[in-house]
Length: 402
Image: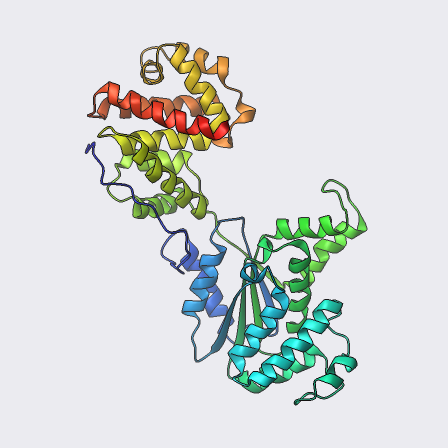
């Protein structure tokens, strides 16, 4: 095995719309085919459901790239970037800007939207505001009617307006619920498809927090919150959980030239979430700079996976215990000759409830350290240099706990 890796480089966390990895391509193709087919009945509202960092933004970017411009007009909107203002008003302005070059019309509709959204009554007849805004708007028109007229005029029957809303669940409670209210406007407009990246659980929590509902309690308000989301989104599309072979392919692409056994260890004991995978690789890259041995990427890799599974506070305790028993590397090496002694050492310091789920069994811990022990034997640096690497990684991690 090559025991000197090419430097593990940091990776940008910016989603690019890449569909090759983690099963995103299949979901993207299915959605594109459905949206552009005759099967879809508009208006339609679709939720892309997934946890933080699971790839929701990447899927929206992929849709933006793959929806055909002759069949769709795509408006991409990042709600969180407008968090400091009013995301709902900004969304209306973005749609109007994409549909029309008439700056006066855009300005007037945004004013109308601002008034309606501040009142939080989006479907009311805004006679007072409309009287002040006479440029092309009849006094009896509501915001919904203005939008519908403009969308129908610009889109027609040959195209669909696709509104992609990203990072909705990162907004504060009021803005999140307000944008959801705004989405109801588009549920009455023909040829309009709204697709929002959203973690349903977080939005439910926003609803519960707004009305002071405890997570464990059952109440009519709690049921109403879930029904509210179900009424807005006719279809929920989950971000797929990657299979091990998909995860391996993705990680192998991000960490080129890393030996197979290390990639296998990452697949089994590293995170599955795409953003968390990149965060972990970037941490390995940074930590390798702290080290000085020829095997610095390897030591940084092992330490970071330990940190990922034990958690920093628990890892510090494990390291201290191993050092008191004869040395961090020496104790791990001893697992091959005396597994019972190693297990007793671990049991004296390790509390499974304090660790992440993959390390909440002694069997998983033993498997990890047995593999790690074999890796130590293949390192080419003097043992003293490797010991210094782990000492530096330990000190850096411990300082974060002070």
